[in-house]
Image (cartoon, rainbow, N blue to C red):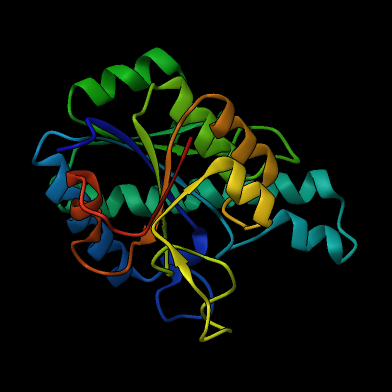
Length: 235
């Protein structure tokens, strides 16, 4: 395996499958099997999930809701998704721990960096819920922050698109895909990979990002094995 320790970032929308909202158990089971293929090979896996399939704070704010309240609701949504993924992983016989940046001791451990790293060393998958614990920060920022803290080798951003394009491939049939691109080129071209805070933090810490299609079976193993799948953003 090319990478020993990874941070996998999943959007909340990814958990919907073909539904309009909520969580699709079949999609969760597929993800669990893909994750099992790499944990069986000794890869240490940490995961951050968004909450957009349940609630998005920014959307709530645009409809008149207080932004801080909305963001806290979004953080709780990520814990719900984390519990769902934890259940799917444990059904696949993968030992898993859910840590939350917001204290919910009855359902999740508090985030403690050393404990998280110890779990990873013991072969447990660690799911980080609750975002950063602060409003105004996205789960992209949480993913980069946690990846740096646990000393991950790479951030794998699993999406429904097979990489980074110069335009939205779902809307523009002539969109061109990048196989490799630098952080500076992403910024210069104005491409949306992550929000600016998360992306800059990743760049400053020289942490590569690979954007790939998580919904294609076997892609996760290919990426971790070092095959050219998706788009790699590096220095």
